[in-house]
Length: 414
Image 1: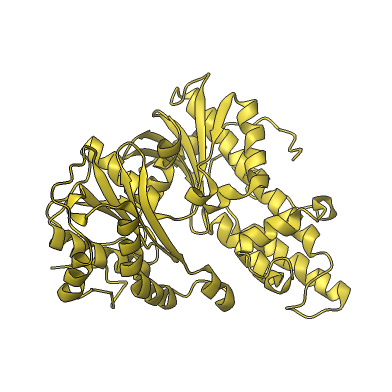
Image 2: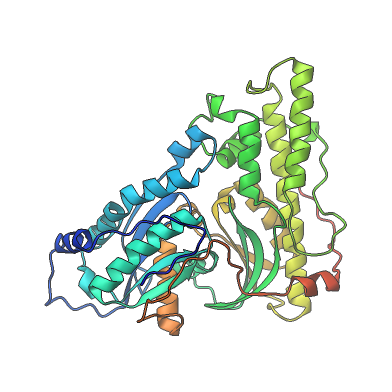
């Protein structure tokens, strides 16, 4: 029996006949021998339907993705039932495309890995239901995946990175700093106390009506802010970074959003325009909010590095900071973090932009990592459920706050 979280009363469960037909669409080659472990990864935690087939050497054999960005841009944000319906409409096609591109039969898969936590309940339910049907039909092991664990481990697909390393995950739904000691061994140093940076940037972009800007009409909010900020002067607005007195590694972005909202309202009065029209100072506001965000993230990350080195949790000479998640593709924020890593003798690594945002490759790779380590591989799927909210690792943020490490001031000349 499939047990799902009560937060989702309706979920997608494809019929057995439909899944049988889906599997029969592949040409089976029983004589083909595959020497490597091969995992199918499925991702539906938010607004992207993605799947990929990856082997244990890191080769991406096939991938497919359906982005809902264009739909959600028109509605001004992600509406969970809409996202759920789009996942339902596309998941079978996307999985089929990934498998077809890989050139392998589903019968040779070593396991199926799927995001089950955290994320939007309605979206997670679609991916989990479809995956469990596949697992049942193919009689393959199932590997439940923590979305943030997958983001953190992606760098090991593209670079030779040994444990331990520090990871900063920044996206539209998440913001955290963690020490990665193993495939499923994380120490949480700090997280956002309210909203994520990507969410805040999206809201500022909507408040500035950047979708009406001719250069930004097809961009997500965060991309629009980054693009417009290049034309602006961040010094036109003096905004203090959040939580300056708090000597911990937690983040906060809702207060910054409130400050920017007040600035926008004031400028609308000064320019005599109504809400929804584009301000002449929009580029300056974008530059100011991006710089303040970058400084806030950089300072918290700086403290995390100092804490880990002070406690001998990271190497003193060749420590690695990995930055992943959608906001990691923001080059301005990345340059701010480079200033920090240069000052602390660390190496900054980021996955390629296409692997920073949600994708099936990172889920399949996380499956490979767990398969090799023998962690969380399920032969019995009874009772598997999704978890819309789920922390990552062991929370030691109180220890970080008690250490009260003072961060040296760095010149953020970006």
